[in-house]
Length: 486
Image (cartoon, rainbow, N blue to C red; front, side, top):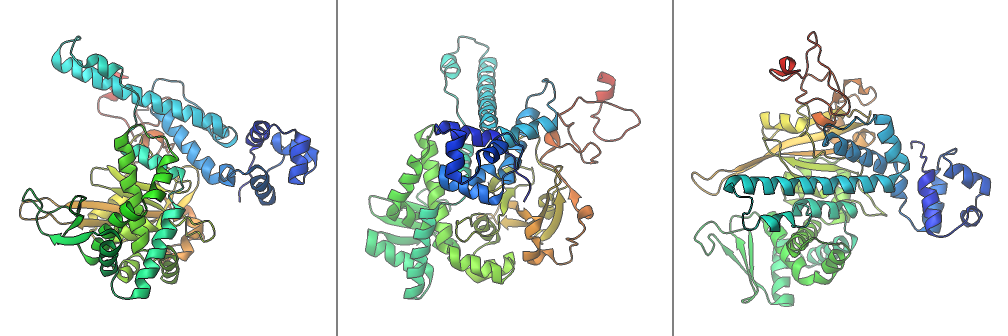
């Protein structure tokens, strides 16, 4: 455990509760001089002190963890990188801000987010006026007055991360349902169909085409006729997932609403999207129940293919579920999950701990999630080192979903699952890797604009944390014509 100095945070918590140093020291069982040293960052926090703070002040000690500090630092780097033209902020100052002033860090990140939203609104207004060549265009004023908004998917992702990618009430309810299904015997899909019919009066029909004559959607519920239509092309595991999603929407609505009510939503559409996300989460926990899945994963040393075969689900589903195992009394490994396409678009990302996926400057081409496209269906392990010195084990593999008929395009993604190198020996994919000497780890970054590696041969953009210098005798990032312009 790294030394933790969070005196400003502790002092703020004490003052928020109207306590003197003497009163808090007595409550924590510490001497006033020791507490004063903690608040002045003259002594680091120990595990026992953190546990006392948690008990007395009722705060999540995750706020004091180095993982949270690393995430804040990465977000601050992102924010600085997206604001060109400003004086560069030295990295030691950003680290100091992330470590000692978490509240101020969050305020700055919120202001940055609002700035980005404002920029998007202005760009939209510019495009509309430019297209019509009319500054008095009807609706332009509405666009100017439009409230600041997040992209709905980003708002839902923030909500999921605020819960550390784990929803205890839904997870336990799904696990109890899975236990009932196992006790009855037979397949999970059969139990779900019977349960939907007997408990909710819902009949399940498998269809090949939808009402428009096209291929049927995976799931469609007709509330009027109490009929759930499932696509006949779904595999057993996929059928159980869709049935579980519908069951969650019907049977666990109070638990889902309670979670949704704990957050502020910018509009009803974003809230509905979050509702579907929570129902999908429940379905995943039903198909892969927490205790059984974690036990099996440990026994198989997290062999992803064997886990997929054991539970009758796909590679992506297994990876996604592994990133959600954050139950307090029985946590799984802290995995990070990501799904990208060939163009580098990130369509899924889940991280319950410190790994931060950048929104600025793309991702890193040296990351094995991109190499996976060149070797379809093959699992590629990689030891990857970040600029801050942290090393991770990443496992990547491409997955392809065929089109629905002749001439219909399919979908290909690369799935990445990563964890800190300290956990690597518990994974079967660490075989053949030298975990004692990490010098051979591939140096990667969050994206060129926020990556400090000046000598990277794959650099596409300069690092915005310091001024750009051009040396005609150096290789690296120099865009065509840039030297002449400079």
